[in-house]
Structures are given as structure tokens and as C-alpha cells.
Length: 125
Image 1 (cartoon, rainbow, N blue to C red):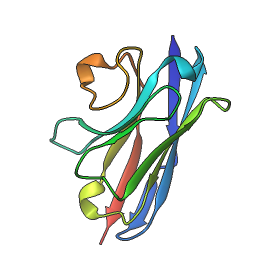
Image 2: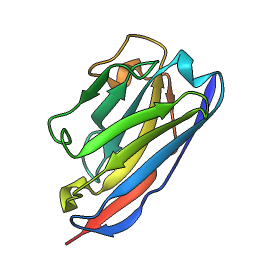
Image 3: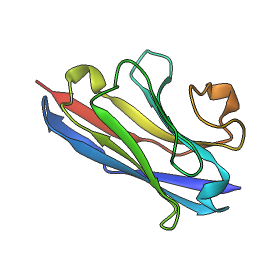
């Protein structure tokens, strides 16, 4: 079992950058492929990025490819999401997720084993 805690969200202006962190406790983080999702008001939870257990394979949704970067430090048991050139459409609650199944690539919410509590990101014009 793993517990996930996101941090780093906040209110920024369009064009700014933020780095989200997801600290894990319990099982070693290297047990899981890790991902970031987000959910805007009135919308479904959207998968944005996945990183494989050792960090060698990355996947990004079209909406964030080229602007967001997922990374992990298995020694620190932490996953990161670097977000650059933020846009108002990026406003959402951002969730860290862990899956013990699969390798990398697109990740359905049905395959997520653990969720963090979420951190709010608000991007103003």
C-alpha cells in the first residue's frame, strides 16, 4: 500500500510555471508506475502523463506534450510534474496516481490503485 500527497499548486498567471510534487510513503515508489491526472469543474478526470517504474519511459497527453514534464526520484520517493507556459485551460485539481499494473503509456482511471488528495492549480489571464 502507498499513500500519496501532492503539493506545489497555487494561483499563477498565464505563461508562468509551476512544479508539483507527489510524496509517497508506505511501499517503495519503484513498485508503481506513476501518473498525473487533473480534473476541472464539471469535467471528467483527465490523464496527462505517465512515467514507468525506473523512469525510462514517458507518456504525455496531446494537451500537455511539450509544456509539461513528468519525472521521479525513487530514492526520495517523489514524483514531479513541471508545468511550463501555463494557460487558463490548465486550471484544475491535479492528482497524483499510482498503478501496480502495466508499464507506461496511457493510463485509465480504472487501473489506478492509489490516488493522492489533489492540489489546486489556478491560472489567470
